[in-house]
Figure 1 (cartoon, rainbow, N blue to C red):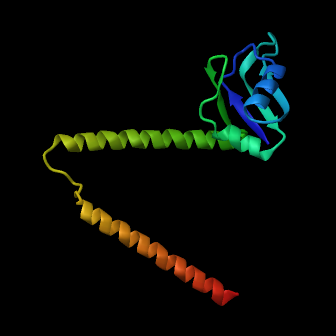
Figure 2: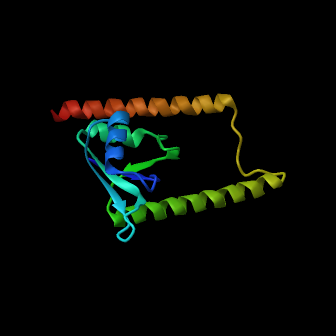
Figure 3: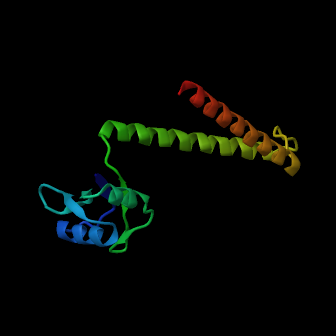
Length: 149
């Protein structure tokens, strides 16, 4: 039931964090502010343990929460290996999106287009087909559930 809180002010105290998160989100069990060994100043991040699961999900769902005019970054606590995998996947997807944008930009410079444009009628027809397929799948699944029971 812990979350990672980044982009904290460097002079923040544990008590200040506890009162801040208790007011904003919910009851806090413990707080660990990571500090520099030599200077004792905060490194700008901390770990907050909540007493309730609902508080954790609320904290993770908050996109913009400010403390001393700083936007806090709240994420799940993860193992370091898992975190690096996620970060590398995000980098790859950002690179592929960038390449895709470059390609589409180049295609628009030319008079021809490889993409076929659909009319609204065709789009509506496709949407109906999809919903019909979903309904059929649902019906089959329900039928199989009745036969198995």
